[in-house]
Image (cartoon, rainbow over all chains, first blue to last red):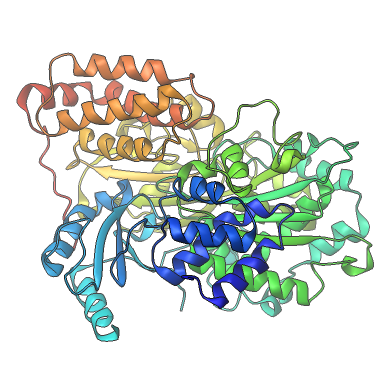
Length: 158
Length: 444
C-alpha cells in the first residue's frame, strides 16, 4: 500500500459526505497528492478500492486535472504563475532567476531532489504579482531578495 | 497578519455605509464565528429561515437586481426562480469558488477573510430553492481558503447555523467543501457540475439548464462567491436598499481586482457605475501607471474580455456601459498595461492560457486555440508570414459562437479586439520580425 491509514480514513470520511461516491474522486486525489507528492496508476487503483469506484473512473478523472503531477517531483514543487498579470510584472525574469539560482531549467528537478521548477496558469493572486506557489503555500509580491530568502529557508528546513 | 498581503479599500468601506462586502476584511478576527456574529453575522439567515417564505427570499433578491458576479451577470433571483417547485428530486446549491479567470483575485479574499459571509449567503440561497445539501467548489490551489471554509463550516455547525432543525425552524441543511484539480473550465457551471460528480471537467450542452437538471441530474443552482456573500446584506437591509446603489440595470456594489502596471494593484469594492479612469488613476485606488509611463491598454473584465485603448477608458464600470464600449464587465478583473508592452506578447499569454485550458470537447475550441497559439507565437518570435493576421481572423470567426460553452468565445474576443485596435503593431511585428515597442518585463 502506498496510501497511509490516515489518508484512507480521510478519503472514506470524505466519500461519506456525498450522495454519490464518485464525487469523492477529486478530494481523494487531493488527499493522495498531499501525502505522496504526485499521482500514478498504482495510486488510482488504491483510491478505487478505498472509495469504491471503478479504477478506470479514477484514472479518467485524474488525467484531466493538471494540479496533480503524474511523476515524482522534488520535495518542493515551485510553481511560478506566468499568466498575464504576473507576466506584466516580470514572471519570465522570475523564472530565469530561479533557473539560475537552482541551476536547472524549467521542468527539471535539482540533483538533490529538493526543488522542481514549473510554470502554471493563473493562481488567483493577480493583485500581488509576481507570485509563485511552493507545495501548498503562496508567495506573493516577489522580489529577488524575497526569493533568495524563501529558497534559503526551504533549504534550511529540508 | 493576513495570509494574502493584497491591498483592499476596507478602510473606505468601514466608513461608507454603502460598502458591505469589504466592511470587515481588514479585521484579522473576522473569519472567526464570534467576530462574525458580533458584526450581525447570521442575522439574515435566522430572519430568512424563521420568518420568510422561500418565495419571499427570491422576491427580495429579484427586487435587489443582484446579478451574477462570476462573469455572466445573470440576475441571481431569476436564476433561483427557475428551479421547479414541484420536482420530487433533491435540489442542490453549488457555490462557485473556482476563481481562475486571469486577473481575478476577489473571491479568494472573501473566503480567506470573511468565510462565514459566504456560508450565510449559501444557506439563504439554499433555503430559497429548497436545497438541503449545499456544496462549495473551491479551486484546489487555494489551500488557505479551503482550510478557512472548512473551519468556518465546523463553527457554523457547532453554533447551530447548519445541521438539523436549524434555529428550531424544522429546516435541515448540510454543507460539503469540495476541492478542484486546477482546471479553469470548471468555473463554467456545467463543467463544474461534471467535476463535482467525479467526471472530467467538460461542459454540458444546455438545455437542460442546471436549474432543471444539474448535479446528479437534479435541479441545481450555481452562484459565484461574491454573489452569495452579497445575499445576507440584501436580506438584512432589503432589495430596495441594494438597488439604490449602482445604476438602474447594474445595481449594488462590486469588487474590482486591479492588476498589472498600476502603482497600487488591489481589490476595491466600489459602486457599480464607478469610473474606470478613476479606478486606475485615483490615489485611493490604482494611483496611476507604474513608473509614470503612458497607458497602452486595459483588459476590463478578466482575460476573456475585449481590450480597451486609452481613449476608451472614459467608461463606467457596469454591465451596460462596458458592452456599449465594446467590451464586458466579466468578473471585474481590470488588467492594465503601459506603453512598453508588446500587444502580440500580451495576446500570446492569453491564447496560451486558453489553449491549455480548453477541455477538448468541441473541435473549434480544441483545435482552433492550438492553431491560434502556433500562429501568434511565430509572429511574436519574429517568424510571422504575410497573411497571418487574416488567418488569425478567419480562425477566430470559426470559433466564435460555435462551441458548447463560452471558453471558445472567451479565447477569441481579446484577440479580435487586439487586432482591431493595434493592427499596425501586428503588421509591424510580421514585417520587421520584431516588436514595435521596446518592452521590459523585469521583476524587482
